[in-house]
Length: 209
Image: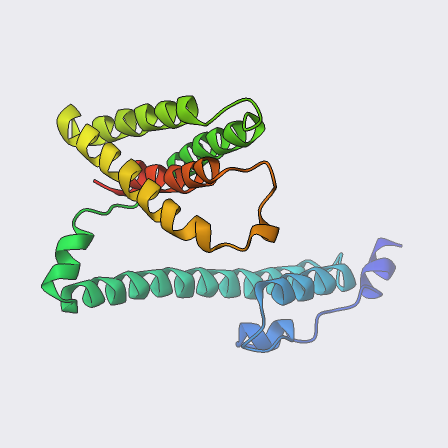
């Protein structure tokens, strides 16, 4: 009975095909989703035949490994190209990039949440008064984060105050250019300028060294 059942199990016809793409029946340009779909379909179709399943899984693993190697190489090549671009850039740009760093993504999101919260708090509180308190808290947070990185309170204060001043200056120039019908009637120039300042404070304490 068992032998009769095994003899009726369909056999994968491409077990001897060396090319893993041809074995799975996908194009060399197939996406990972297409490769997964082909693998799942073939395993379902030839379930119960051990040699067929091993052949399908073997081709699938080869394609996954080659895809991983390609991604790794592309990341390395991208880093190499970026490094080369930086090395070929003008001296003033190199000096500017020396002051910039890329922190971990969780650090970026935490600080983005903090300053977004300050912005939302300022908007919610706009009917009761100006955002002076929220701006002060944001500046203090910016200085704290900068001091953690620079280990110099003086430098942290200088960068923080400079970022606040730059943000306030840019906001006072940009906001009046926005058509009034795009702005909520209760939002004052001071409030909108403070929102721009929060962006500058976030950028300075997150990406500046």
